Length: 487
Image (tube, helix red, strand yellow):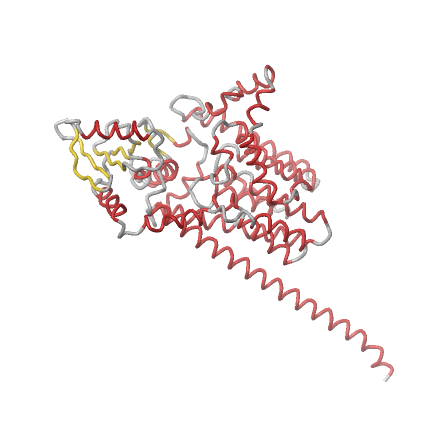
C-alpha cells in the first residue's frame, strides 16, 4: 500500500503533463487551420476584388497592361519586350530590373489572361501569412500571439494594396518574409533561392536582401555569411541601377531620374549633392505628406519594430527611394511602393514583440488592433463600387466590350489608358493620343485617368474629322476608328 501511495503523485504529474501537451497540440492544430483558412479566404477575396476592378475596365495600361505585354511577349519568344509610351519597342528592363515577370510566361500558355496575374499575386501575398505565423510562433511561443500577427499582416492596408494591382515587386513581400524565416532558421540554401527570386522583382530589392546579411551577422554571429549576403545584395542593386537599366533604356539613362532632380537625379548627381548641398535631401523628404505616410506605415505596429532595428534596415532602400521622390504616389499606401518595407516592418515587429517578454498575447493584440483600425482603407472597399460597372448588362460595359472585340489580336492599336489595359496582350500598343503606326484607335471619352480632359477631347474631335481615319463604332462615349487602307 505504501508503494502505491508513493507512485500516485508521480502518475498524477505525468497525467497533467500529458493533458497539457494534448491541449498545446490541439491549440496549435486549431491555430494552424485558422491561419490556412484565413490565407485561402484572403486570396479569394482579394483576387475577386481585383477581378471585378479589371472587368469594370478600371485596370489601366499603366501599370497592368505593361506587365501583361511583357509576359505575353515572353511567352511568344520576345523576352520582356514592351511598347514605350512613345511607341518604341524596348525591353522592360529599361525601366525596371524585374526579370521575375518572365517566370509567368509558361503560366500564360495555360491561362492566357490578365486574371492569371491578378490571381497569382493575391495568392502570393496571402502565402506571406505562413512565414509570419512561423516566426511569431517561434519567438513569442504562443499560438494566440502568432494568430494576432498573422491577422495584422493580412489586414494592414499596405499588404492589401500589394495584393490588388499587379507589380513584380509586390511578389517581394512574401518572398522576403520567407527569406527572413529561412535565415532565422539558418537554412541558407532555401534562403538563397527565395532571396534570388525576391531580388529579381525590382532594382532596389537586392540591397534590401543584402541588409538581411547585416542582421544575420549581428544577431546570429555568422559574420562571413552575413557580410557575403550584404556584399552580393549591394552589388546586385548597383549593377541594376548602373548597368542593367541604362543598357536597356532607349535613352541610356534611368527613366525615373526626373523624380529625383531635387537631389541630383542620377546616382552621380546625388553624390555631388551630398557634398555640395546635403540640406537638399532634408528638404526633399521633409513634407507633411511624407510625414503622414510614415505615420500610416509605422504607427499601427506600435513601435515594436524599433526593438529590432537591425532587421528593419532592410526597409531603408525603399524608404529612401520613396521619401526622396517628387512623385506623390510613392508615399501613398495604395500603391506598390511599400512592397520593400512591409516584410521588414512585420518581421521586425514580431521580433520586437518577443523582446517585450511580458504579456505577448496582449502586446500582439494591440498591434492587431492598430492594423485593423486602418483596415477599411482597403481595395475591397473601393472595388465594391466597381460591381455595377462590371456587369455585362451595364450599357457602358457592353459598349466597351463590343469596341474591344472589333480590334484584331495582331493589330497595332492606340488606346486610351483604361481600355488599353485590356488590349496589351499583343506585340505593339501605344497610349492615345500617340498614334505612331497604329491601324486602329479605341478611346473612352470618360477615361478616369485623363488629366487634361479638355485637351484629350479636342484631340478625339480632331481625329474624328481627319479624312485618314474612319469611325467604325461609337456608343456611350466609346469610339473605334480605323485607318483607311489607302493611307
